Structure formats: structure tokens, C-alpha cells
Amino acid sequence: MEPILVPGPPKTAFDKNRRMSDLIRKQVEHFRHLEEKLPPELRGALPQHRIVTEDDAARYIAPMTQVLLERAAAVQAAKAQSAPTPMPKRSAKQQDQGLDLAAQATAQSRPALAKKSAALPKPGSSGKRTK
Image (tube, rainbow, N blue to C red; front, side):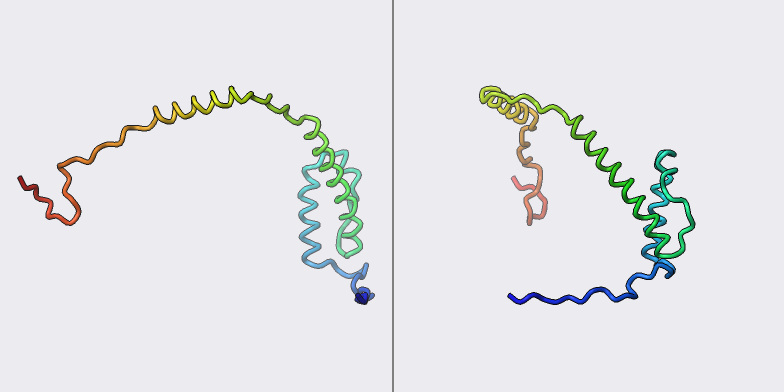
């Protein structure tokens, strides 16, 4: 199979001095919202500069992403350490006994089916009873 040649991005794809797009602006707003919820010691480590250009946004987004990834990894590690212990396995006899109890409870909880009353008219009839 012949390789497919893909041209590289144009030089105008990234301009450090270009004003940031709406998409980048929304990402920065979202990160600022998340930053407010961080502890003060982590907020102090993040850059606190005015974000106007693509370069400004890149210099803020990179460290903020790193902080969020580290926090996510710490939460995952904590969850792994505090995983609940599995329930002990039940023997086949215990499982059968449990099924029997469940079947009995289900049978007892069902009300007996009510018989149709002779007083109710049959569908399609005039509703009058005949003797």
C-alpha cells in the first residue's frame, strides 16, 4: 500500500498574537470556574495573567490541565485503595435456600385472582340480565 502524504498545517494555523477564538475563550472561562473551586495553594501555583491572545490562553490552559489531571489521578488512586470488600461466596445449598424463600414470599404476596362477577354484563350485550 502506498503511503498517503498529508500536508502539514499552514504557518497561519497558530499565531501567538492573534486574539483567542470563542471556543478558546469558553474553555478559559470553564477553567476559571474550576480554578475557583481549587484549594488556595493550587490556585497560587497557576498563572494569574490577563488572557487575551492565543499565547496567553496556551500559557494558562497547559498548567491548569496538568493540575486537573493530577487531581483526577489522586482521586482514582484513593478509590482503588478504599474499594469495598467483596461479599463472601455462598454455597449452592445457601443459594437454593434463598431462591426457595424468595419464591415463597412472591407466592404469598400475590393476591388470589378474583373471579368475574356474574353481575357484570358481557361485552356486546345490552347490559340487562335475563333469567
